[in-house]
Image 1 (cartoon, rainbow, N blue to C red):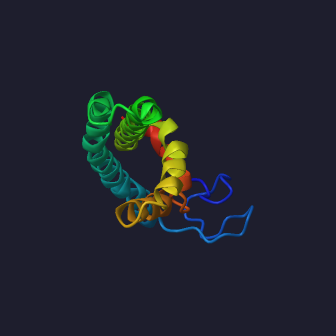
Image 2 (cartoon, one colour):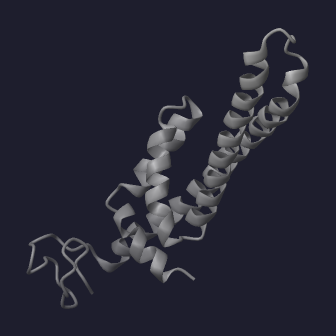
Image 3 (cartoon, rainbow, N blue to C red):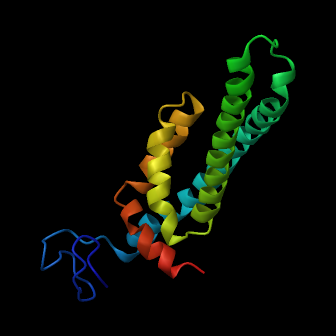
Amino acid sequence: MFCDHCGSSLAPGTNVCPSCGRAILPTNTLTSVSSRLERHLRPLGILWIVASCFFLFPAMIMMILGTVVHFSIPGTEQLARLLGPFVLFLVGAILFFVSFCGIFLGYGLMRRQSWARIPAIVLGVISLFHPPFGTALGIYTLWVLLSDDGKQYQRLATSSP
């Protein structure tokens, strides 16, 4: 048995860590703490996949419009005819890329991949600025991955099947 705070080895039945002085939870409580993280990783991954799929449709529409919108711009506006479709296609492509990254991230969280924690935290912070659903997803992501239990993600990722 090991201390969840400092990592030092503990004798069976120890109530206080001899190294750091932190109270040791009973074994069944430690299992429920790690299962809390396990319980939230799968729903978090599913939410990232679902939220990212909602961005695929507008991204595809913007990319398609970017390729055909030059037909609807009057012929006298040369700058608009050149930049308008390009900017529309570029924004759609960026939205498509971010959506693809979110889907890939959700899959990584569901599979407990070790690389998924840091990108999830970064995308969680970015999604805070997209109210209301992005903000909720960002708060939930940060709540799961930045908690004391979230710091055990690396250990959980290496021990997952």
